[in-house]
Amino acid sequence: MELPSFAPFPPPNLKKEIVPEAWEMCIDAWILLAQGHLLLTRDAFSLKVSQDPSVVEFLSSYVEDNARHLDSSVDSKSILLKRSCYLLVHRCLTELKRRPPPFVAWQFLSDLCILYAKSPSLNTLLQDVWQSEDLGSKFQKHKSSLTHNLENAASKQEQSDLGMTLERTAALLKSCPDYGQFLMLGSDFIDALSALYDRAEPFLRKRTVVLSYRCFSALMHSSKPKFSMLLDHLYALKSSKKQHSLLSALCSSTPFVRMLRDQITGADAVRGEKLIRELSTLEGTGTLPPKRNKAARGRADKGKGVQRDEYGHGAFDGGVHVHKMSLVTQVQDLFPDLGSAFVIKLLDEYDDDIEQVTAHLLDESLPPHLQSLDRSETMYVSLPLQK
Image 1 (spheres, helix red, strand yellow):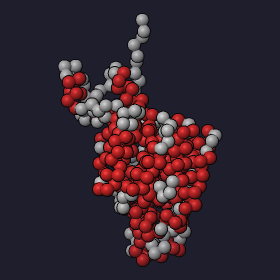
Image 2 (tube, one colour):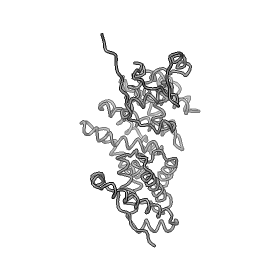
Image 3 (cartoon, one colour):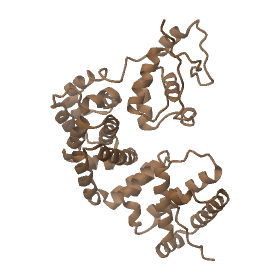
Image 4 (cartoon, helix red, strand yellow):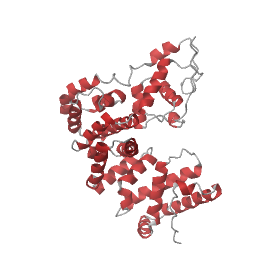
């Protein structure tokens, strides 16, 4: 019996018109169809996809819509559909002799990285796709367009639109370091990013810092690290005499300098030794305060009856030290979507070490008991009245 075709995943304006009972029937049908396709043999699956365009159309629409409107639902059917769609995309990208063109487009791959950021197989999958499809040559137009937008975004609306593009770019960078190396070839892209930082609205400045961190990380963590290229870019950025530059923000609000010290070796380490020392002086000029070790926290807590939950996080009683709230503000400067209560739990977990908090947020490597929390949770602090 031949499997029927998929109906496309509806856009938000149509989805909200579907009553819950009908929507659940749609989910059930998609799950049944997806699992049926997953059971096909390699040859049968390849033939089905080549003859039935609804498979690619459904998966494209599902990934696009769900990447734009991330759903934190733990509903078992939604989770099963999400997993099944990833497995179908994986089969399309690894088993077909000719990959579907929509699946190797920048828009789809960036959305895939947003939706399945925590998938352990995503990095390997994208590395294989990048190299076998020679995406570097296919993405030249995309890179030119992105660089042009970085150079020319002036109005608030233009910068808002660019911010959404940078968010998608950062997602693809995290899962595909080869893409980062591609963007960093030549100086046009990083120069445009640095120039944008100088004139950008505050919200966009934060995204340029995250994007630059991802790009430099890609030069260190890809299959073939490019430390020489990395140092060239750093020396060029350092030549800027501006006090509040992209480079200073990168060094002061992310663990970049520490990561560079740990990763660079050999002749590149010798060449970059002086530069790294100079960049180290910037580590304490921005959002990263001196580290607090566990012993210090123990002395501070001793005898004060501090209540902590099962993971050692402080209980919220409405009274938060001014220093603690200043750390919360510094983390939220780089991650404005995080709620204050969630940030405090991160600070408790990592002993008020903002460098560690920032690193784990950027790398999405929080432990499971933190990943499962509501990131938007906010606490309300009652300040004492002045007499």
